[in-house]
Length: 147
Image (cartoon, rainbow, N blue to C red):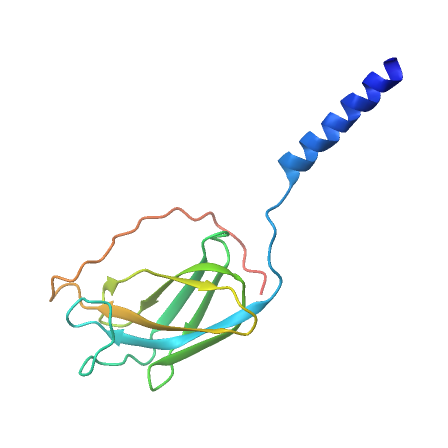
C-alpha cells in the first residue's frame, strides 16, 4: 500500500512538473519580411501615389514573444527592405527615418515556410501634421551584444 501511494505521489509530481515547466510549442522554420518605408502624408497607414518613399530608414522588427529578439535593416536607395530567415512568430514593426518623428507600430506574423510577408511601413513628420502616433516608454534591461 505504501509503495502504491509513493508511485501515485511520484506520478502527480511528474505531471505537475511537466505542466509547470512545459514550453509552448514553437514551429520550426522561417520566412521573410520585405516592403518599403514611406512618408504617410495623410495618416491613413496606406502607401498611396504621391507619398514619398524613404531611403536610409531603419526598420525595426521585434518579437512579441521575446522582446529581447530584435532585427533591424536599412532601406535601400529605392526605400525597400528585405529580411530573410525571420523565425516564425508575431512581430512589432516600425521604422525610424531622419526628419520623420512620427512612429507607427505595425504587427506582422511570419507563419508559413518561406512565405514572404510584405509591409509598407509608414513614418510621418508628427510636428507638421495631426497624424496619430503612439508615444511609447519601455524599459529594456542592459544586455551585452554578443555579435
